[in-house]
Structures are given as C-alpha cells and as structure tokens.
Length: 301
Image (cartoon, helix red, strand yellow):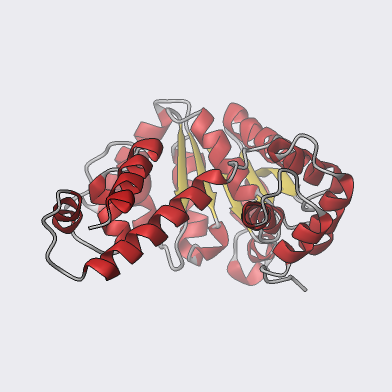
C-alpha cells in the first residue's frame, strides 16, 4: 500500500467534503473496499485500485478548479422573468418560445426558485397526457392521487390552485399531447383561476395556431407572448466577465463566434475553456485556449 496515495486520498475527501461512500461509487467500488484499503487490509489488485484512486483524485482537482458559471441577469432572463411574473400577478396565460439553448429553461427555473411556495414547475416529458399532467400538478400541491377518480382529482386540484396565488409553468410544453395542451388551460386557468406559462420551441406557437388542432380557446386566452431571439454579444460579455472579471474582449468574441446566439453552447465552451486553462496553467483565458475549447463542441448550423 502506497502511504502517499492514502494521504492524498484522505486530503481530497476532506478538502472537497466528499464521503468515502460517494468516492467509492465514483470509482466503481464498494465502500467496504475503500475502507479496507485506507486501513491497510485490502487483499485485491492493489495496483489497479491505486491507479483508479489517483485518476479519481485528478478528476476531483480538475472539476473543483473550475469556477461555477453563475446565473447572470441577461436581457433574455429579464424578459422571461418579467413575462412569467406578469402571468403570475395577473393570473394570465403566457406563451414563451425560443430555439434550444436560449436560456428559457434557466430563466423559468430561476423564477420558480424565487417563488417556490406558489409556483409549480413541470418539465414536460414526451407524450405527457392530461391524466399524467393532472397527477403531477396534484402531487406538487400535496394532494393524494392514488386510486382517486380522475374527475374528483381534477376538482380537488382546481380548488387547491384557486385557494392560493398559484402559477403553473410547463417547460417544453410542445411535448404535451394535444388533449393535455387544451386541458391544462381548462384546469389551471379556467377552473383553477391561476396563471399558466407555456414554454417551448417555436413550433409550440404553430401547434396552438394550427386550426386543425382546435386550440382556439387556448389561443384566445393567451395574454402574454414572448419570442426570444437568443444570446446577444453584450450579454455574452456579461456571462464571461462573471467568471473572469478581466476576460479579454477578443476571447469573448472568439467564443461568441462559435456559440452565436446559443446561451447553452456559450456556457459549455466556457466550461471547456476552464479545463484547457487548468491543463496549461493559465490564469486568464487566451484566444488560443478559447479556439481549442471551441473545437470540443458540436457547432450549430
């Protein structure tokens, strides 16, 4: 047993507040094996185990050396926040659409976190029907759903919504089945007397306005509509400078040139850039490092 590796392992666990149980799972071992190793009682393949421990320590050092990219109040976040707040305050229906990577989900979660006692946030899964949707809203309201007749559950859910200053946010609402999209308007807005926010890709607007889908009741009740245009260069600069206060302008331009209006891709490149900086012992990002980090993401057409 290498006493230096044992020392480094214990220091890493303490430094980053990681339990032996979690470290063991990360390495693919049971906690009993790691405990046996640190006490000098491991009888298995010592070389293989120590190699895994050293690699795990290196991953932890690299992961924790990165600065967390905070939520920055970009123009898009403010627009989404304001639209959601308006729907909440006025018990209205808001439709928010944008391409993937526009930060609409981040913005919606940010609002939900700020208003956790009154906001129900649901990340819609493909094929979610009205029964699944009603049960999820009821569950978040603390209503028992097991073996409750559907009509009774609808009534209980609507009453619970109406009793408080509620808002329901459906993220990726374009994945709802057609019957659920129309039904949620009836459940939340009409019966529940609450605000409703529908968030999705631009196709969501087309789904609602397509006469064949017969969503005229829903369309007529939408009082707030927001279509995001994506990340702007000034907002990109705000995000980059939240990580490195003195981030060079040419570095920001390089990353923005790859990510364009995609917020998600912009932040992913910043994360890759931090890895590149760590490997090259850089205190500030450079254009060369940014170009290298940009090669590690799938460029959008």
